[in-house]
Amino acid sequence: GPFSGSGVPYFYLTDMEISVQDLEINSNASLTVSLAQTPYCKKHRYDPQNPLCAHIIFCGSIVKVNDSEAGLAKKALFSRHPEMESWPKDHNWFFAKFNITNIWVLDYFGGLKIVTPEEYYSVKP
Image (tube, rainbow, N blue to C red; front, side):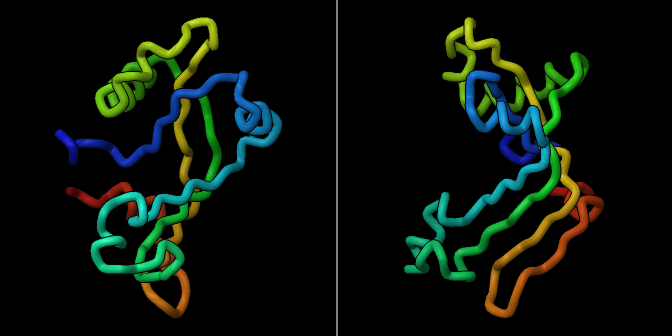
């Protein structure tokens, strides 16, 4: 179901992509997810830069998954993005995950809120 995920962000990547080449040198990265990606902010007439149009910032590193986790990553990604399965095979796609070390939430004026990875992963939908 839509709420049965583990919370681990998975990626389907290729070494042909310039940002992946950068990650091979330094795997540190950040990922921002915003309510602007949903109808919520438009419905409430919040500009995407308004803190009320909340976003979460994950910091950590991108790591290739091992064979035992690749099946889970494949299921997680292809179930939501079925087109990925038909992407060109000669691009040598691989599965990776975001190894989260820091999380910040901006959802109101007055600064960020810190969420630990332990708190994030312990939330039950």
